[in-house]
Image (tube, rainbow, N blue to C red; front, side, top):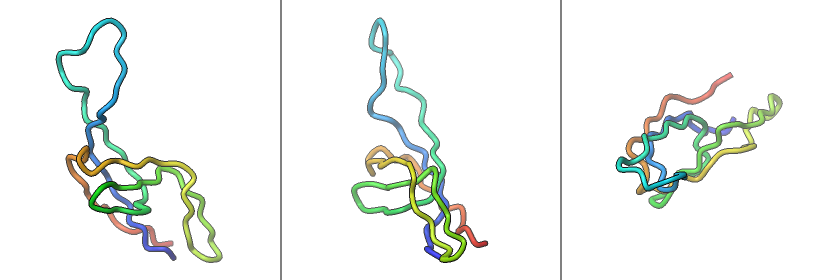
Length: 83
């Protein structure tokens, strides 16, 4: 099985929408959990939904996001998925 760890990333989004005026406070941090597909010094690619092949015990990302490293407040490895 691919050893992609299940992680939680607390991060602050750099883009957000406002209707009437610029907010006085920063938006709340986002908490995203999923499988880390790739992590570099520049970003973390986290898949929030994956397909799983029980024969090969591999995962394949369906959707997720790339979070820039500078936006990450904390990065916590939870564990590995073992069937």
